[in-house]
Picture 1: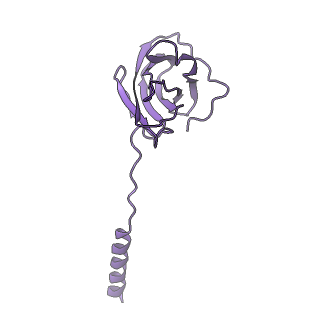
Picture 2: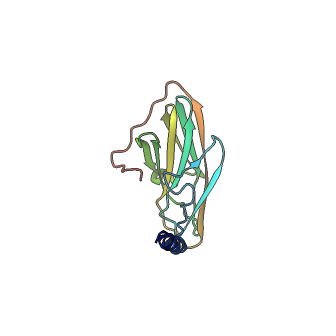
Picture 3: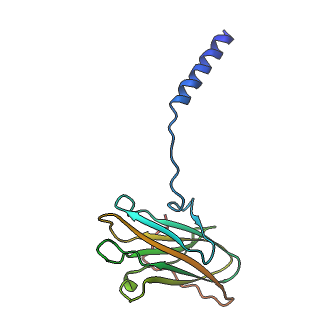
Length: 168
């Protein structure tokens, strides 16, 4: 009987193994749990298509002392030449406390090719999230971005906007 039970168990294992579902992990940077790890001053690229226009771009920066980060994003534009607007949030990774949030509506037509924001930070890890506020009608919308850091022991952190929501 033990041999019979062993055979049955091996058969069940084989059948269950063949029926496994392979789940592909989300691409790096598309979830808060798997952000792109940024080195200060290093340029990165991201893009959106019609299928991914609601996808956030999550980035992780490691701040070693008090100062401020400067977020510089090349304004994304579509095939019609219109600039894409973004919602930007910075929050502390350890407790998901949102430190700063803004949208780019007011600076979309300011004559600069970049959106640039400074955010006061203390030592710790921070998530910098870009959320598209545009539609992709055809093709792909590209942007490049970087985060820099400057030490400053008298950094003032701007309050988060009252209408901001959870980072997820």
